[in-house]
Length: 317
Image 1: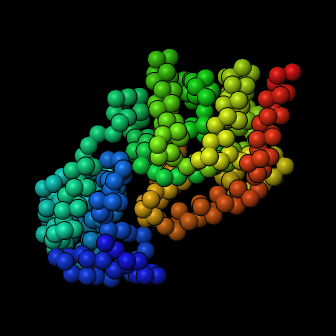
Image 2: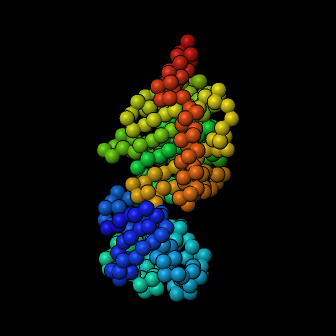
Image 3: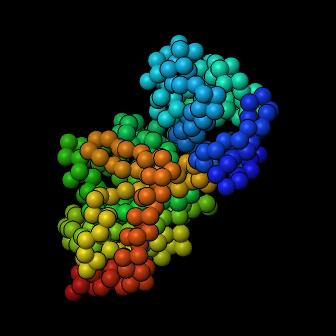
């Protein structure tokens, strides 16, 4: 259980004692908060909790590394969820941080479930290592807010558009690999219509809809798909028109992943051959502010639907 009071978080912690943590952005893991999470998210949650416990007892990463017999870099990777925490390491952490039941039991469960394989492992090397964390987090997210100035966001792409874009962005990939990438994207899109659908807010620059990806027929199919999928109750699409002029979104695309557990909110920035994950609450809040600002300058959902319909009609002539 946990009770949040302003900027103070009070909860049962070390050996059943209560402690106050004057840092917003952490949470106590319970069976409820873990339900439905992906292994990727569980590893990151475990890392966040280990970092919080370390800071609570006043230890450094070097202290933790000396205790575990590893270097501080390995500790840092564990705390960021980039390196799996073994059960033996976790039990050593319990001794160093004086963690007792029931908190230790929750963390052990998190550790074991974080070692599971994600649904996307069947795609093998088709999924770049730097993208696997994103898929794992997207699987567990409640909402995705995405700003895309150059092309239609992946969750809203039609199959032919995905294939054409994939071939352009990955010229060294074989046709078979492009097909597998397209199928992976189609599998991700199933979350839009499952029993617990993902909520998507997509802001797309007008340029992305004007760019002829794959040729006229592919773009026609993409616009028709976008018009259809934007009618789902859990999907909101807004287009930022050229007339909006200069704005802060011109610095580049970003995607915000919002989880049922507020501290896990993350912003994903895709780079060339790698990705950056922004997790500091103040920075996540900055991106959320920019997103809402862009939403205000974009066309409304209704006006966006009209724009897309007009673009389709002009192509039909």
